[in-house]
Image 1 (cartoon, helix red, strand yellow):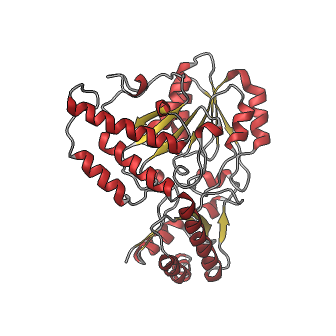
Image 2: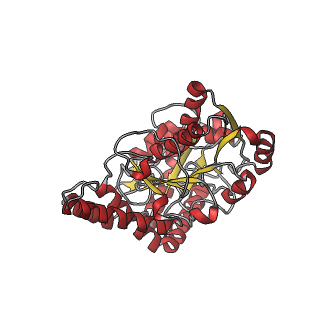
Image 3: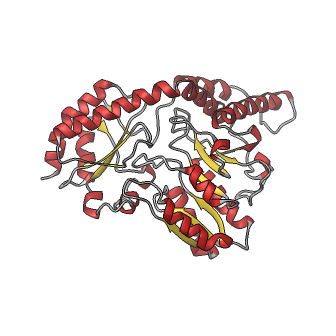
Length: 378
């Protein structure tokens, strides 16, 4: 039986989300239409918006549905930059997902943005002292600060509230795609200006996400058309995806504490089992504040590509890191930013656990890992 330990890439859809998607797919009507069918679809979308907003600690009007987390990040980054042409500087952490780093780089190449990369510690935490100095030296020029809520490769949770306090009146965007539904996330308490969340990371469908944008703010849209979603994201809303997203959020938040402790315990068992089987293994991403299910581990003397192929042959699915960088043979920028050598970065893989992971899965991985590492080191 296949063992799936790549939940950070995408999670299996929850039965409740599948059911909600199927039921909404059977309903005809465009949410923008005024007739009975259209109003029925609109009602389902707005009820889902309200549920997701309550779970995220924001107002329903602050939820802007998008087609993906990547789109939401692009919308925030480019939207804030274009909305304030007098400020040309963007501050971004060195360990952001490429859905943040790449649009920032695009703005540098095509729009003249000045990009400042804020460093992180060896544990993968934003260096607050360095960030403070960056902000103090460039405050009048900064259009946006982007620091992710948690890292998708090593799992470290970032001190976002501290970042917001340092930023003052500078907009702060946080990519919470990996966090939302797995740990406590409260938009209002954090004080950020915007945040990205996504359905398929917590048991919902692919193809639907949201940008949470503080009420009263307008940013320059990427798309122009029908004026949906506060005229910030024009497009016919994906009603089945949104309703399914809400169903997944409802389940995730209902079981948040139980799932957190279950997945954390399984991750601890995996680390202990790997340490016993391969004493030379090195775990990356320290500190107590981290996502429960991410185990990032270096096996010195191996190549991650060989490790992943051998694991796959053993029926175990893991990853090198971000799924969005799959097929790109280069060291993880996250690990390099944490001052891990290229050699060790190339010997690192990520196991990411979820609510469907079992103790039997972990036992099987721990049993197989010694032989896999031995073969990968040949």
